[in-house]
Image 1 (cartoon, rainbow, N blue to C red):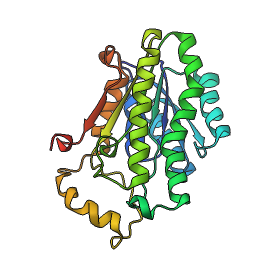
Image 2: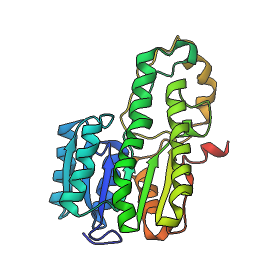
Image 3: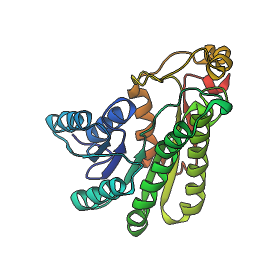
Image 4: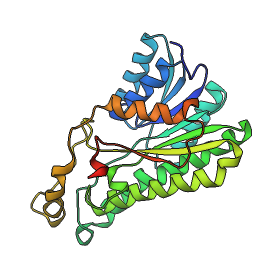
Length: 253
């Protein structure tokens, strides 16, 4: 395994499956040493084994990234095992129930916001001192079509992904003169196996239904991973603050 990330330390969250797994494998194939962060121990360990069997280096950290102690463990593992953090991919996330705002209960709102927005904030805050000390770093967040429109998900998920867009742009501006770049992908429909718990008779899903016909072709996780790797690479050295739709043109409709 050799390529543009030889010896670099990369953290990928939600790396036990879907887009995160594809991104972790892609970074490792280019020589990166990868921290596989995921809530699911079985999935994380499986990806580590895949990377090791292909001749790469990876280590799993299992836990809920909405908890500060887990965040500290992820960042600490990258620094202690691999000498720092060159790339952070905030990919882990959960769907809402496509609920309209009036139907969102406190539990749904707080869990979606905590996992999709607060966890990336916490982990980014944890790794930034190491990137700043090194004078370089790339952060790639997984936003969503729901981060650039109001018709792709429920109120909680939409708010969380709009938050990721804002977080990404703020990071790009605040740290662009200190060697840090922050970008995000905005995936369209992707075959990740994530199946939301939807009450199709509720107002939210019914209201969103007419817009779902614009989704187009469902992408593969590897197509999203290719965009993530590009944004983290030296080939994108002057790309900063970009929200890149990877959606077969859905954002153009």
